[in-house]
Length: 257
Image 1 (cartoon, rainbow, N blue to C red):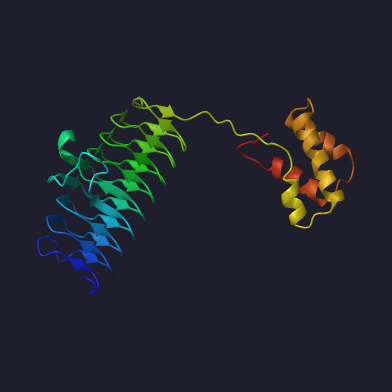
Image 2 (image 1 turned 135 degrees about the horizontal axis):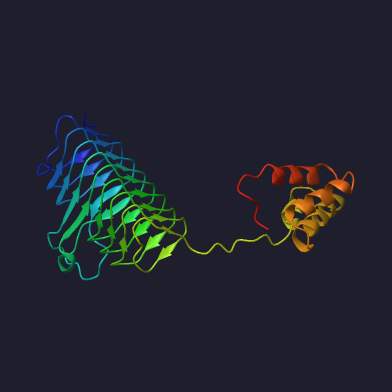
């Protein structure tokens, strides 16, 4: 179950039940548990002890040196539990001596693509980290917590059990257990993408009709329901405005205005 292009140091422990794909590299002092799968181009550096039934997707780097200027090659460790999935380009650092020397991860986690877990972190069981979620050094994430996509957690912060951090949130203090935490959502619509429509070949007349519809929707004192009714009573405004109206009518989460 080991591809001939894989490079495995003689000091590594790899059970026969593991599957090691093309171009994977496993350094010495790595202890893999049973039934682990390294798909391809996975790098695991030690010292690291990894439990059973873990799946490592292509280009993940597990147990790399900590991104800390005070690290000078000390023998620090990474420990990972069982039944986890580490998606593409995930990076996980070993600990530092000043932080206790250990980065420790639990079991049944889903760590999505491009996520990063910094040195000396402690991550519990059943944790989900969505795409590009980032934990700085010394962060604690308790069981069943979720960290949303493109969210960053400041060093030494804690994320409580069962907490949910919404996407794009910058966390600079501890997140309460059982809570929902999200950055302010300031998204708004700034009118019609007129230049883009011109480049698509829209005529001035078509763009003018769309701009009129947007003025009714955004700049009048009408709410969305009233604005839609006004657009319907104005007669045939063309297929573009009809598409806009249908899009708003079919929205289940509301539209950005």
